[in-house]
Length: 236
Ligand code: ADP
Ligand code: MG
Image (tube, rainbow, N blue to C red):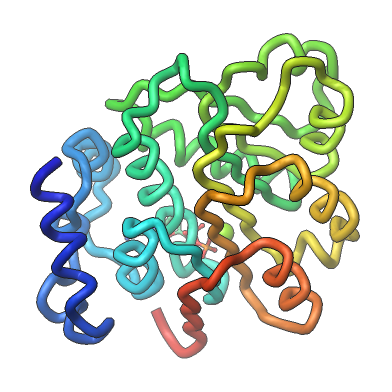
């Protein structure tokens, strides 16, 4: 991945604006794997949205991210692409266990993100699981250990950390907290705080929200280290 390394090096020598102009605009121009490029083309994703342009370069450099933009602006790909590339660059294989966790407030949202992730993973080899409660706990427990990417809701994830033998996140590389404002509104502060204690300190964390307020700030404090903050509220 010589090309990727070179591009990442260059990125650090430009300001955000300069980088945006020089290294632009379409998914095609990103220093990412051909496996991901092929999947994006297949889904006909060509031009990045504003949040994707702003987030993806920083996230590819494995920085923590605090991202806020309105619903429908394309936050999902802005974290899924860097997540899959992070594991790819780390040469993650199905034998390496849990590499990334994506936590969302509701089953429906988790199922949507699972579908998008599945399509990005078409030419990669990561194993993935959806943990959303509703399904039989034991059924899940017997299948999650060793999964590379888990997409889940907070309550069920915490239950697995507390009760499922052999399930741990000791090698986790990437954590995503999506729809953070909704998670707090739904009363998940306690579970999220508890989940943090099961995760290693040294990892990349990306936190996304449609809005920012005082309680989000609390969640940032316990989850992010020196994040790149990207707030877009005007337009796409
Ligand atoms: P958010 O999480 O900010 O609410 P999503 O990630 O769910 O937004 O994206 C909203 C919609 O926009 C989805 O249907 C998605 O497929 C589409 N979308 C996202 N990024 C792009 C893009 N770069 N080009 C075209 N469509 C996109
Ligand atoms: Mg979203």
